[in-house]
Image 1 (spheres, rainbow over the protein chains, first blue to last red):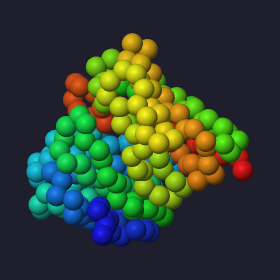
Image 2 (image 1 turned 180 degrees about the horizontal axis):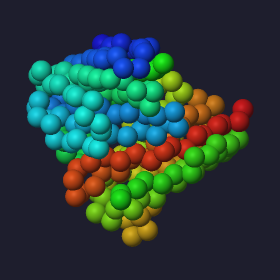
Image 3 (image 1 turned 135 degrees about the vertical axis):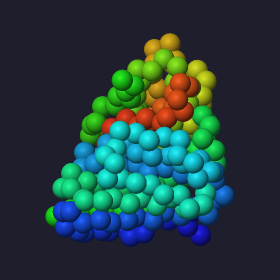
Image 4 (image 1 turned 90 degrees about the vertical axis):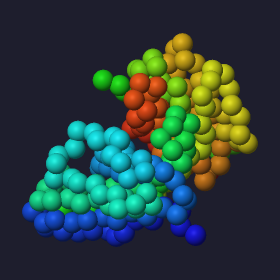
Amino acid sequence: DTAVSQTPKYLVTQMGNDKSIKCEQNLGHDTMYWYKQDSKKFLKIMFSYNNKELIINETVPNRFSPKSPDKAHLNLHINSLELGDSAVYFCASSQDRGQTDTQYFGPGTRLTVL
Amino acid sequence: QKEVEQNSGPLSVPEGAIASLNCTYSDRVSQSFFWYRQYSGKSPELIMSIYSNGDKEDGRFTAQLNKASQYVSLLIRDSQPSDSATYLCAVISNRDDKIIFGKGTRLHILP
């Protein structure tokens, strides 16, 4: 059973397009996250939702819009894609937003903007 | 600006030796510390978590935390080629519950 799943695994698109990445967790966790890992492998948090409510919103261009229809899903929509958006995007979840909670990562979505 | 610093490596260690990975953090009110392992092309997975000063052992892995020095390390005993990966240090601040990852240390175990 896949705990945290993301689709698609690979996404290749042209500059200026709009695309979405979907994430689902079947762990019953309350908190979900989106991370961006750039070409230098630096993993940086973008957003965090707890029970469908946005709790962390790092300095991310407003072209990026997360949406959480329920606590098991957190999708990421990106408008007007730019070359610099090329990266691997990881979804993750944790039981709660607490200090000790382990985060479980999805397999990642490799986005390439041409 | 809160930071988590790691030597990017690569760190090369002979098979069977002890690999020592180090991490420093800048936010004094950090309370939770994690080591994640990431194989090339894969997602990070949790190896160890530590919350209080001292050592915490789990199999071949030992995490060491020194809050006074703002330093956390991971020791891997009896290193195996399968331990070759990038190891990410992560810290959660008491201030805002945000997790911050270091840039990772690439570890290469030499057969």
